Length: 71
Image (cartoon, rainbow, N blue to C red; front, side, top):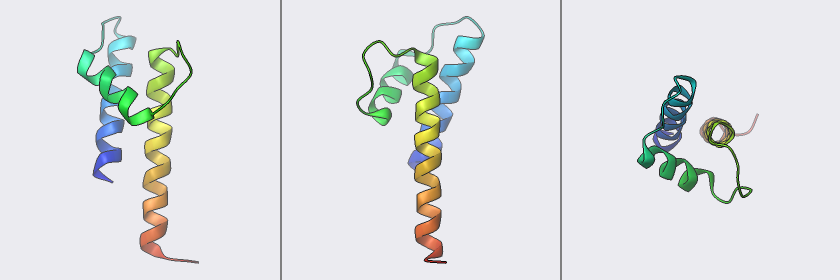
């Protein structure tokens, strides 16, 4: 869960920078690429950040289901 939370926070910082017409921190961009894994060449940073958030939420949901057990 902690990994998913950190990835979401990084993605939100990148989206905030883009929204404010600033360049995101390069280390945040590197972290997004690491977390997202293989992505199509030339993907926009905003799309990458959204992909990371979706991936983090899916991992969080899977972790919660594993802790709760079968229905």
